[in-house]
Amino acid sequence: MKRITIFILSVCAIFMLTNCQKTQDPGGTKTAKFSSEWWTNLYAGGQKLYSTEKKLVTYNTAANNDTIYVDDLNNLYGFAVRAGVNQSALTFSTKDASNDYYNGTPNFPATVTITDGKIMKNAGHSKAGNITDSIYFKVIFSDDPSTTYEIKGVATTNRTEDNY
Image (cartoon, rainbow, N blue to C red; front, side, top):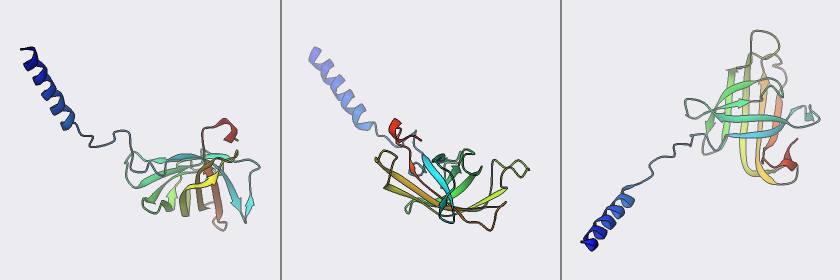
């Protein structure tokens, strides 16, 4: 009787293990390859505008589609906009996107255009020299449409020696 019970339990365990298949990643998002915190700087005419790097974040939208937020956390110019992504090329862009920071005053630009946005895997070096991802894009703000700014930076590593 003991052998029959062990046999039945073994068969049930094997059946349960072989029928459990992971069909999705409940914590994943469609734009995970784009989502990061970045140490960046704003450039105009090739000149760095800040003496130290500022944090910028890219993250998925609630729709969880091929759209990300590009948000400078009001550190560089004051913008948070949605941008479309090309998953295979790791590129992103948007034209005349509404700025979530805009509040009807001249404190923030009403719209933002991003071109040539690119995430480059393992193409950057952190402050301490660690290899990390790199980000680059051009940006035009509606309150200064004659200037094309550049934003360049590297992904944060969460290491103390890499923080600004």
